[in-house]
Image 1 (tube, rainbow, N blue to C red):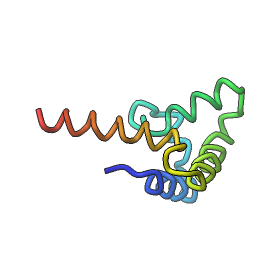
Image 2: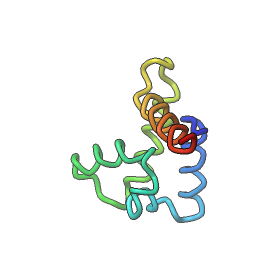
Image 3: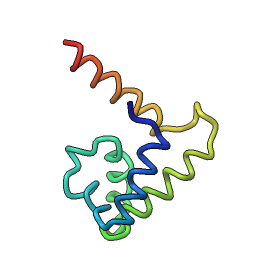
Length: 88
């Protein structure tokens, strides 16, 4: 099950080992990050900075109250979709 802390830690590890741009290059395989990436693309953030900015946004979300974390709600929907797909 995906959690906000887990995807933040995963992205931090990916940036450390040099594959952080994976959230840009294969977005269909990383839907948990796509809403943040699309917002940053709309703001014309350079592609090389997007993984680090997404990491900062996730860290900021972790400091918010649980009900005010938009990524948490998206993860909940993704987890439900995956559970229904597996259960069928």
